[in-house]
Image 1: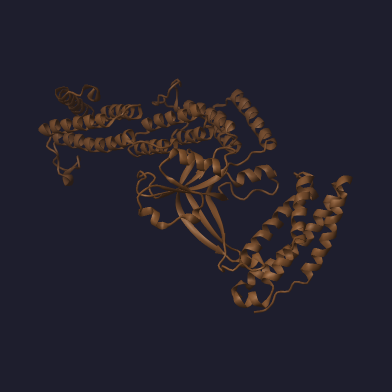
Image 2: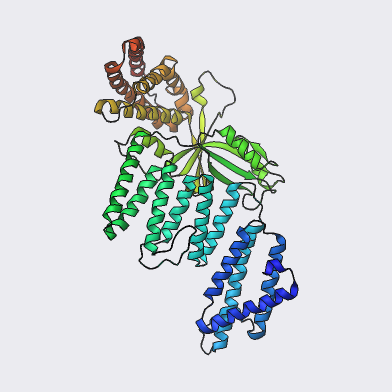
Length: 545
């Protein structure tokens, strides 16, 4: 009524009625929870609804000013140092007045949060959803659990309407954390859901969460929610419900074993310049791209959301001076996930599941940049190929309730040329060891084509000068004299090169068992080049500084 009237006398009358309601509830019940809840709900409806304007914000602030003036007539505003309603000698009127003034301080804070949301203008859906979530967190901090859950559920429904099943599932996980398995009647009213006990509500939402994660192909999370749901069914001895749940669980495991999932790309995105709004200004985020979206398409999408910004396609173009300059600059670079919360995978985990988990449930990413310290490029490119790793830790794991998470920590690491070579050879050996092991044990052997490509990739590198290039770059007195502290990496690299040989021998043995006749010439050529590799590695010696 306040924001619809626009009439000063009516606003004053409504403020007088509002204060009377507060006084009555405080005097009778000793608290103002009913009016507080109704006010928060009204504010939420006002600001979440379309069309909230600066005019409405000004009207409501004038209404609260009127109410405070009316309250001050009966209860002078207490000194902050004397705000304790339970202090000795406080009369009943003092207690009521103190509680009412405390409520108005709280109302002012809540009003500020809601109006900031209502008046903000967003360039992207991510900005709007992120601000809504922050608003809901304020409700939670203020102890408004019921209202918090109701608006989290509204956020969940919005994600579902958009077909954002992963985000819908993660929003529902937050709601589930707020609910217990209590048999008490639920005070929470959610759209399209009938009321019952808190436990029944949680069980119903568990089922919806599983469905959302299955649609998002996040089967591991669906299975986690099923484990939670099982506890409830076991406690109720709901055997029919348990049987249905076990059938669903079985179907998910079958799908998990059969379906290969591709992890979307991750992109570092920094917003620099004084013309960005406060929620973006000079902040950096990790974005989880859409399925099958490449970095060029992502950059175009970001450019369309922020048409006034200049988009740079590499973090090497970043200049710290951009932070204080006028205008808008967005820096975008592809990053790789490097730490998953799933932990170290068990050795018998199917390869396609392991590869998916490496890019799922991640909070640390790496941006790799190669550079040369010496401008004159020599004949051997390995000798001057340095690597700068920028490790970016995000505030939340991805995927999550949003497709982006703010970067909260940045760590730099510089790798010498020999360290870079060591890491590359070690990674190749690990991949080859896993593939060959699958054939030797008969557990989850990969396709013959992949075995062929893995063996040929290592051997072909030798044909093109791989080991010889390493030998010329690092195993000489000049390099050791220039970088004496690299000697331990040089020794480790030689050990990895030696470890490659028995892996190739085992791999070629398995390859000969399964290779068809039309691929036998390729196999024989690999065996021939393998012999030359053995001879090359046997001649390498670590020079002494």
